Length: 198
Ligand SMILES: Cc1cc2nc3c(=O)[nH]c(=O)nc-3n(C[C@H](O)[C@H](O)[C@H](O)COP(=O)(O)O)c2cc1C
Image 1 (cartoon, helix red, strand yellow):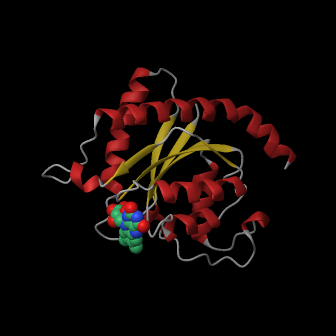
Image 2 (image 1 turned 30 degrees about the vertical axis):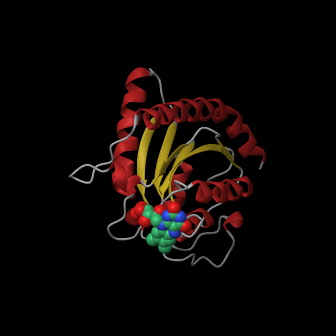
């Protein structure tokens, strides 16, 4: 069975990322209940990794890691067959924490599909996702067109701070999960033969 890791892309105190992840997890549960044999989805919170700003001397493409946090992050990404990045928009780009986490590794990302669910102000994180798509090209991560984009999410919070999605957002999430799951499964075997040649 394929494994897809959902990466929460923010780390600051009082962030919205975990509440957004809760909603995405509920969409994943609905998706996996309706689709037998769907990939297994696991949540990864960058806060739990505590990655400092990149502190390896050799480039990730050498895979010569000296730090325990790099080895741990490498194992987590290695185990995945695909990704779902939860992307906040910071100054029209992705968060520094997410870019830093991507930069730590190289081969672990290669030939794996990813989808994006983003949030922010008026643009809903769209600019951050477009920037991240460019980075994915360099990391040989295959980006999926179908996405979730939530503008001004603070207008959709209930009294407990939970995110209350619209019908359109739920539909977008299901379409994205279907594409991500399809490509993650489809790329698994070819990826293994590509990786052997790399
Ligand atoms: C440093 C910083 C810069 C931001 N810049 C933008 C921006 O350019 N566009 C936007 O839509 N929202 C922007 N925001 C609002 C964030 O999208 C919003 O605060 C979101 O909750 C951030 O994700 P987080 O709470 O998970 O950290 C910015 C927030 C921060 C902290």
